[in-house]
Amino acid sequence: MRWTVLSDNRSDDSRLSTEHGLSIFLQRSQTERHKILLDTGASDVFIRNAEQLGIDLSDVDFVFISHGHSDHAGGLRYFLEHNQKAQVIVSPNAMSGKFFSKRGNLHSITTEWPVIGEDRLVLVDQTCEFSEGLHVIAHIPHPVC
Image 1 (spheres, rainbow, N blue to C red):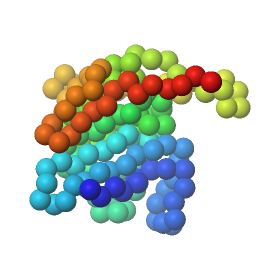
Image 2: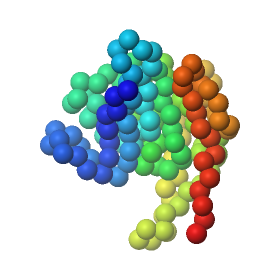
Image 3: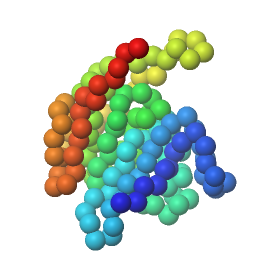
Image 4: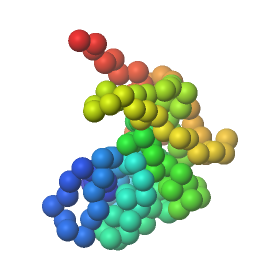
């Protein structure tokens, strides 16, 4: 499987923009099935970077949103404008939660969720095999210190 980071805090490639956000394009070999996007960063930076790298995001089959922070799901509305077919896989907790950061001053980092059609939205609240050989792991515990 090939991983291409489309959005992150830094880049060694001067053609690419950076932001406080994460987006990774995952593609199995050309003979295998799925093109996957993991997170969408904070804005449309991942789309512009994909274009610079020659990656066609309109072909993505699934977009997995890891959690509801705006630096991981803030670009989802741009993706949905760009891609008309991909299913959006996300935990209902990510979509309904309110998230805040204490860095600097207290501020919201909750994603503003776009409208996602029922035919594209897949809410996952338990670990499962989503498609043959493609698993979703839900509810990874976070130790509180």
